[in-house]
Length: 493
Image (tube, rainbow, N blue to C red):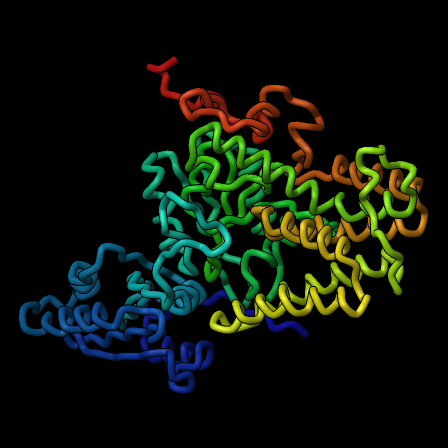
């Protein structure tokens, strides 16, 4: 039977509070739960905290300031007011229940119980362990900021606030997980973001019932967007504050989860996953060129292998100018099997690179590229063209900015490959048609996945294909239903 915890008010007796904390939090058993009892003006005062989540220097200063009250104050009847005035910190709140007090302690705050008082003071002295902001490995740019989100939710909201100093920027803090009590922040601009979208996300997060979300943003995504077995990403992840801030100004909502450097952007479409910050760090013409090359790479990662296999199986489909496509000699293994082996081999190398220490990954890559590929050709396991097209397809997936989208495209390409291998031209056409229809039918929080291509929006499609100069990009995307569609100040209209 599930244990039910009844909400209990703070007792006026510090002894009862100490017994509760010992039973509930493990004071005296858990070494990381700190406890200090001092006497202020002949009144017992208890301090509780978690040693690894607080700044010990601030605690020392607070205790020193409180102890000095015995030398300068004599009014015992107003001991609570005196202590509150001497808590040397910018953020001091009160709580009235033991549940609230426990949550605050386990979140890294100090809680002070005063004998004779039914409220407790909470001092925010959190100092979470973590790394300093640095550029994320998966979203590097040639020019641009080198900071990135960290595992600290407070730092992440500050990185966003630094770029958008608007009084209408909101950071709503929620908690998820009966046991983990993970902090989750909803970030949006009040007069831009759609109220319905914000309410929908808030309700979905508050309805989550689970012990904890130790896998952070990924677990949260699966509760918010129920996509079942669909491999395509329904939300966008980013570790760059500038990318997140840009989406806020467009009318999107951010979901920031404590302990994760990846911020969720909603809602998103297929084309959001093909964007990269580098496009906006270059001149519009260069940014457009980069964008087209990226679209070509994504297209190749999906359709190159099944299309080449189709031409190999039926060379009559090729025009005379491309009649050279296809293996010159029949190998010992069927071409489709060679392609599958090539795809699996690429995945072996990718996973090995992830799990290989950095000092060895370069050597492993050289061995794979030079030795394994050449030996596979020499022994007749794989043909040269198989390695060529498999490599181009793999490079296309690596060019894809979104890792989640690149993996989904690999799965789709493999399905198209098998359909073409078994059913030829008919299988290729049917599988491609079903693939496109499945993308058309996808919706991310009621947002069409292929917008602005389907349903077609000419102006939005133009901004998708071409990197519009910033002074001319003066409207927000209509798909997020922004309250304020015009991006420039009124005086510039």
